[in-house]
Length: 491
Image 1 (cartoon, rainbow, N blue to C red):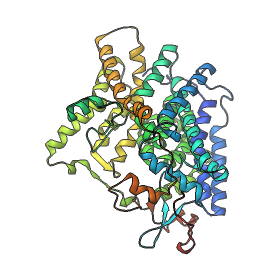
Image 2: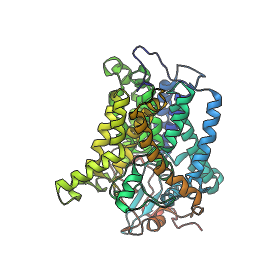
Image 3: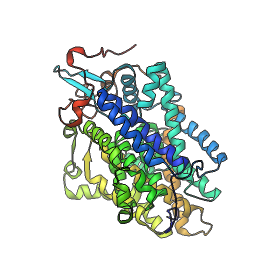
Image 4: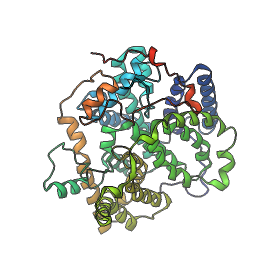
């Protein structure tokens, strides 16, 4: 990919890099308030010092992209986010029942939100909460309605930062236009898979991403409409990695990102890990990466986040996907078809048009490996861990399709991208034609049975956990069962 830094490049963090880093880090500052006062102050001081040392220096004003482009990207981000259903200005998909409830509980409850299980034991909200925390603070100050508006603006800001960061990887106007168009509508050949399995073309706005029922690699429109809390850290993280690939600036900011991104999405962090692993110049930047100033301030915040995220993690569904099939041959047929349609054909065409450099090889390897193991009730590891790798495939398409040298391979690439975009359009079509509905104003336990009509209980293990008494968890502000706040739904 031609947009990676060349050998000898000198590039420091600029204004846009710092804005992305602070966007990802802000929820960590707020998460510190989930702990008892002395521990919270310690975490805040350490995180603040680490952020200052990681983001100081470099260019003070440059953002790496002209202001007219930035204004246009902000307008596109507003429209794309609204049509996706964020904020309920258009139709919102059913996952927003749970997302609204999570934000609702963070607004009305003390942190961390605490519940009583059916057996009388104490549970706390154990979920990637970073996406919601800034809006929850707004909601606590101005009311739940303000929280809904805030999460729309917060999402729009994240999308704008991502599109801006991606555009500056390219230099020509044509490449930047192609970059935005591809990122808005990038997706696999779900349309082909759905038509093959269903024996018909989908109706406008019909869900097609789950054409294989047990696994999916989502399009970007699907990600924004259903799981922006997982998509945004993946998009922003991979854009920083690519821009600073093998440069000292990546080592400088890596501890900050390593602490921040798991609070957004641990599974996204796992998908980003291989790119950090190979994107760092370890021999040259080892001292920078692990210096006391760079690394140590984020060690305790990362430990606190990992301890919180890992509570009762063993109770979440996991295992080898091959066990879901009657035979190895059946799994192999499924695996080959899925990989070819979701990314394989696209990767094969790219291999004929551009040099398959290390990030692209890692992306293909990650996408090949993720379907093998299941983690989460809906194969969440594959759905979330694939986002950084798919983003690299999308960005790799920009240069070959804008190349003026026409070839058969370029034509085939355009056809594959067009089919993927037609499938991805199902999400904004649903947003435009579906009925708009308001937030329900219900707590998370009351919302689980509404979205998951086959839920076995109101407290699924991937959203709730028993507070552990090991490590940093004992410093959480968990109320005893007799003093829990009232958890009834608001009207």
